[in-house]
Structures are given as structure tokens and as C-alpha cells.
Amino acid sequence: MKLHQEFSLNPNAIKPLGRELFVTPPHLIEELITSMTKKGYRVLKSSIYFMGIPQSITVVKEFSGPFVSHFANKIRDDFEAVSRKLGIKELFE
Image (tube, rainbow, N blue to C red; front, side):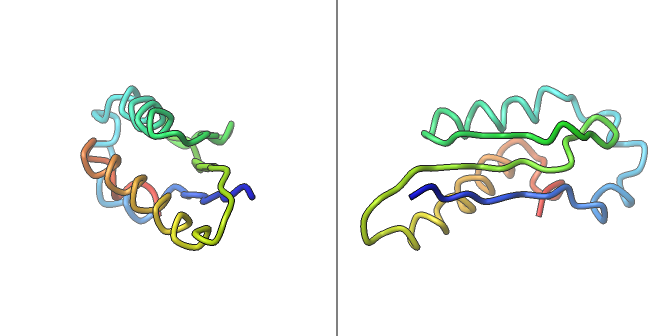
């Protein structure tokens, strides 16, 4: 079974930051994707960008067995941990 979790760009995080987002290096999104890939996930980012940030990031993992619901939460936890470490946690919800 393939589990996926979509993380959409949080527009409320962009409004307070305003032009400060231009200071956020675009490589942080690539580091987020690379880190999730190293954890064994397949990562898809939207082809639509807003101020240089993808509208959404989808994380996919193939699982089998009775622990599928546990791993659904693990995807979200891993994504939040990596994005928090990079300082961009508030960009995606």
C-alpha cells in the first residue's frame, strides 16, 4: 500500500514574513526534499510556485502490513522534524 501525505504551502506564514521570504534561500526546500529522500520517502513537489516556494510537497512511502496507520503519522512527524531543523516549518501545513 502506498501512503501519501500532502503538505500545502501555508499562506498565513507568508503574509507576516512578507519580503523576508526572499531572504530564505531556495536550497532549503531542496535540503528538505533530500533529507526526506534519504529517509526512504519518494518526494514530489508541485510545479506551481509562489515566491519561489512550491505550492505543495507530497511525500509517498510504500508500506504493507498491520502498521500502516502508524506509518501515516510517521510521515508527518518526519516531515515536521526535517522542516523544523531547516527553520521552514511554518511554510507548510
